Length: 563
Image (cartoon, rainbow, N blue to C red; front, side, top):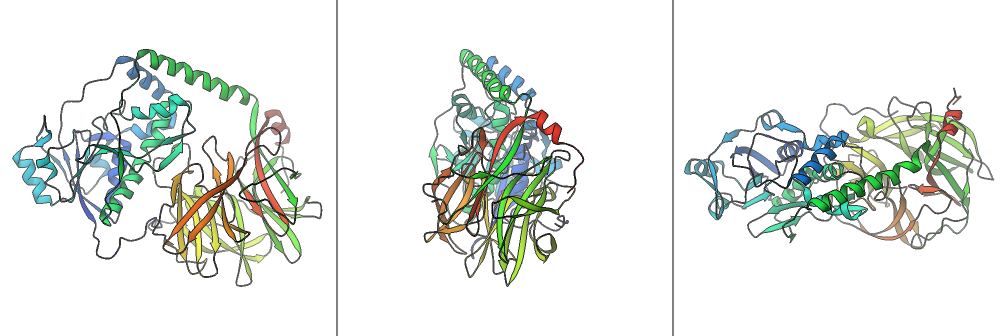
């Protein structure tokens, strides 16, 4: 089966800089050595990227800004105590420990009417470092004299960036409104005022906790900064929009927000009492599959599946006159996905069910491809931080490892496509080493190769998009009436909430463009709460659906099973 990723370097996510461009020399300025983890990870990401050279970190301690009122501080403190793993984002990290090999200097600074000023010794140090860009955390924007010490000026994040309790309060707005998605990006001062850069970033809002919602946004900042600096190194100044100063809610508004979150928690959790998540498959034979611009999933027939498990991530293969169904099979007893295959008879009933792969880690999302007269299979194995290709030895159940396509990456739902000349690999990938809730839903990356065996290279447009509403793949690309369609998941309301069909407008080794067409809502079967995979084969189309069922049904089915 899948080979675990070894100690070799992870697969690059970005194409090399254009010819004639060089890595930027960056000097970071901070107000303290022990910073929130998201800042330490941002600097570590810059130090590791080939478009940036982090030449030094300067520590310039200054008095903290004026504190907020006690009500919002108390709310944030109590909310953080209940946030569990989300505290990773703001946990204290010593820069000396995280940035081994990067010099850390103490300098003397002051804040005057013009902004951050440095003494002559600190200014001389900056001149000697020959910085292209100054990057500031927890400090006021610099004076013009300090900004002039770097060739490309300075980017300074908000004044309270290093304050684990008070930073990021602007993310309260989406939470307070109950928005399905929160807008990300980086608020920074670039010399012309405060701007939101990288604001085309949309992730799911954590509806029940400010600490969680803020963590989801802060853990995206390292990747966003890398992308902004890569654009700058390639000669593209980042664009952004002016943002007004944020005013935190007062005492009454803070109390009302706390009550609103408590009410949401009751509405969310009460229907789940005594119930558990389950998935079903539904399919139909048809000579006229659904139109991606106006998809109608009514009339699908629910497939009977073996007891003690659920099936999801269905894909279809027509081989030698027979129809085969590959699925993620999730036994309730083990709570770990494996890959199974079944033949579909004339009535679409699964028969001859067999296990294909079963590993100590979770497996899902099997897809089969034909190339050079042979059949090839990919399986998601993000827990092993690898994504591999397998060749059929004895179809449908015996496969041999053929090649590792992605290495050292938390990549989900990898999907191959061949346009007749090039092979393309789509996958959602998380760049954050601080995993919170395994939310790999937002960033879609593309890789190109001349063969499915590789070598694979990052597409210049990476990431193709950063939008939880239509990034994560949801099945094979397919042609419909002359248009190439990419199914994707909408994970904004919940993981795997709906299937979105995107028309691929441009696809070649240098360009990518798509636009959304239509979507399958979770309304084709009573009680559904989501659907997240669509595939079609020779006269068959199939989709999966998520629902809640009484736990006693699962307990009754959780008995020793025969594969």
